[in-house]
Length: 90
Image (cartoon, rainbow, N blue to C red; front, top):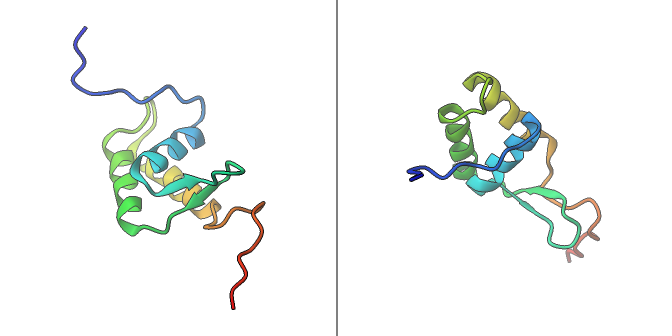
């Protein structure tokens, strides 16, 4: 079967879907050492993630609920890994 649009992998929770969309948009990334999600603080990437949520929410989820979940996940993630030692700033 010919697919014109690549499908995202199946995600079990709305939060997992939101994390996937944020990572796809470049709004978050994982700490290479510990795997914690970190906010890139990129307003353009955040807007791309919100656009993706509005245009292609998961099945059975309204665009409003999808964008709200994206915002909730962004609000719950910091820009540093909690397990990495703080950088010494002089």
